Length: 423
View 1 (cartoon, helix red, strand yellow):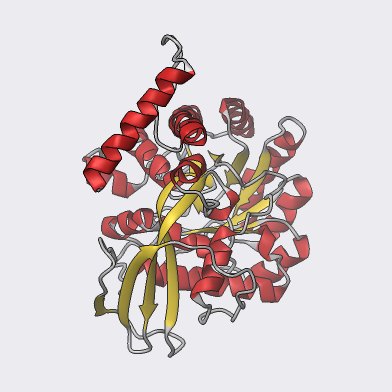
View 2: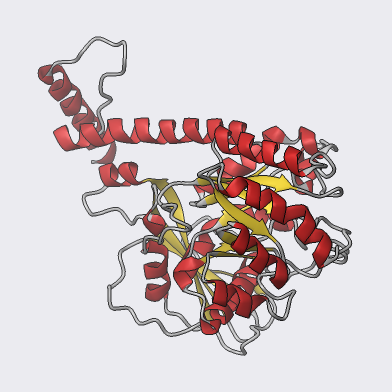
């Protein structure tokens, strides 16, 4: 759902599953923190303790009958004592506080800047690179290359969960993944993640040296998954999926994909915390491509900032996915790099903390440029505002220096223009 002004909009959605109204708050108007600080005298509303700040919010209310209304307004800091009223009934202030709260480190990685998770599929049938890493040695070499290219996390998987994939036995999954994890544990500082839905594989992977569990079923596939993850006391990625790999792309439907996925992840977060998993150890993933149409995927990427009000880091895995092919007309998954980078930059522009990708070096380069553009522009404007109280471009590398008198004259010129144009 979108709204372009502060007017109220409404449409019909499904009745809320709890039979009561629910409030949703989406931070919008995202800019670099320095940009927000330069534009206004008050402290910027820093999104999840990261590099972005939000300047407005979209508040949505889903009534018990399914009717959804929305309003957009400038953002302001909530009271620090806003009550946490529980899942399904949080106040607007409590949701805003959750969006503002800095995230705890995940496996020792600070969540104040985006990190890259490199994909290591030790499978014969993954949708993009299945069958390329046919030996443990090849998988280890590939993983080490991804770490050298900038992956802070290596995600090792031994069971394909692409649309239509059939499950593999536990023994086969163990044989594919555990030797790779054992070999990597002593050879790279990158954190190791096990991409699995199965509790025995979780236990063996953590014993072999893995640090993180990444479960595409959000710990629902294996009846022992939730208790196992709680006992292992490690970070967990909870991904949303509608259906199973065999059925998820048959005919995925939502009344409101953004709110429905939010509700599902909120419910899984609650279940995990009640089972003994620390909230600070949980990451959520909206599950791009898992039981979603192209339109669903685009809506989730567009509205990703909503998920910050869950109060935990966000992982996005859009790399080479089918929706990129649908939008761009590129049939081969391994030729969707440009579209993957576009999706990655959209995700970090919405505050995502982890990007799960195939192409690590290219993603790192794109992130470096994204950071440099934001830091450079914002820093220049902030320095000008602090000096003169208005926007004044400062000296760039290679340009002749401007003395204070010239800068003051430029500032006064800007101020006169503002007075003329705005009375």
